[in-house]
Length: 127
Image (cartoon, rainbow, N blue to C red):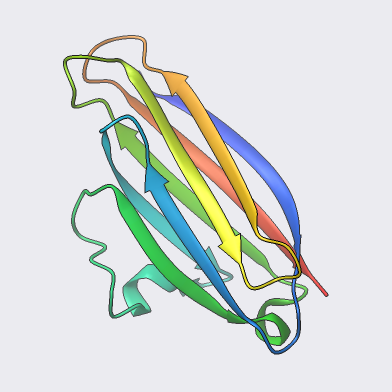
């Protein structure tokens, strides 16, 4: 059985600054991430991303501050427990390009070896 961990944050943007998002899987585990603004799938449009592979990090840009202000970014990351040494899972979400850089870190353990945790982050961009 998988667990779900969810949070909501507001992130202030600057009109001309490019917004960058980094997703990092913690504790040596692997995961899969999906990121959307509305119906736009951000990871499939990023030439540096491989959305079909489980891995430990992603980097993408949803656009400039003026393009994302007033919109919501939805990030869902599934983290699988693949290490025998620990049942700990976690994910770090980092945003840059606004007046301040923000970082959110979530961690939880799975109930059984090989379990999965679904992390959901909603970011509300505002100017």
